[in-house]
Image 1 (cartoon, rainbow, N blue to C red):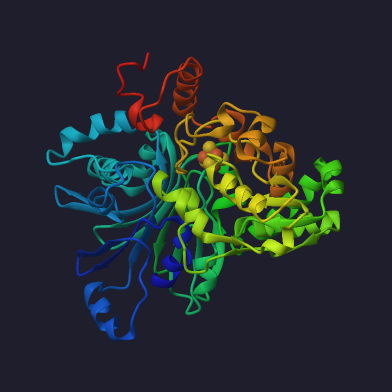
Image 2 (cartoon, rainbow, N blue to C red; image 1 turned 90 degrees about the horizontal axis):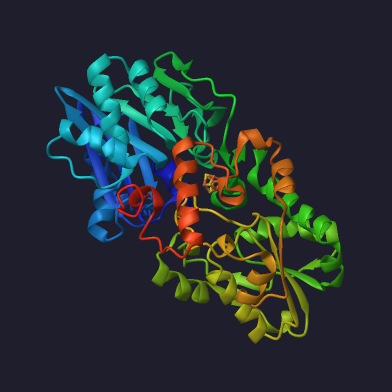
Length: 477
Ligand code: SF4
């Protein structure tokens, strides 16, 4: 569990948590920041703290709740809930959209409940349903039908039984695998943590599927069959590690194809450029594709500080600017006087890209063309990526040429949506493309997004994450 979680620390660096089940009790350890290094002298202490042979782990970055240290720690998963002798522990990846409605339903049943984040809501909702039906399958089925949002969940019942399930659209990844002993079973967001442990990947959970683990292995149940799937396209471009596999293909290979696509889509610019530079590290993967397709030299002239591990995208506003400036260094003489293609995974706010371009200009770059693999982000995400307002997205109010001017590039060349979809090997109906098309797979998210977009375009300033603030706002209608 430790190495699995550590290899997925890129999915959340603000806090981490471990939970084990032993002698009918949950044992929990939670802390802020990255999963810590383990000193061999402290191993016994860890084993004492977390006894048992079944457990859950989670790394988190906030897409719901507050971001001060106290709230971060309170919102750290795995979470637990208990009522009437029943209890449950749960770790989840995703984001709930109908938070307000669930809070109304749950609060009267848990008098001491104070909302910290959506993982608490989903845990308590599942426990309530379990209390009613005394049957995990039926409780999960009700949750799948009544929760709007993305949820890939792993949990442990009060009897110590491990289970996992995915929302009916399968927005966030979750795979199952087994260990070399043939008797250890695991669920994980990405395959990389299975690889790190020498485990074998067995399958990706289907949208709407519940999987229980027993001594006989996995027991799979398709609870809801949904013809529309919606796997997050941003996982391919940015979020997942390149050495993870979705549908048997490394994310790295798909990113290479993204790079090839952009060269084909912007041949004149590729012809004018003299060399390729990548924004380390997610731009590295597509740079190889750009290099192969264009024949241009890929110069490793932007270097990243290996031990500044924060991901600029998921940092809080005030931390982001200075971190990116200190994290990436440019080898000046390599770019001086050159026309440069810079590969980048995405432009969200535009501020990190702007810093890189400024650095390149200072180093003497004559032209800077941005090749961006994720198409222009025009709308917020409701499903677990913290780009949750229109106001923070440069692409929500500017076209590519305007963005180029703002960030100081000579051109911003986004990969087309078609190119991205084809490279994944999936169809439009199998992907979530909501933040780049404005078409949300779940109904409440669509309603909220449309309503807020109209207000935003009329000059309204959003007060916070749409799914947390808008419903409650008196200005909502
Ligand atoms: S809206 Fe964008 S970031 Fe969010 S789940 Fe969909 S594709 Fe991923």
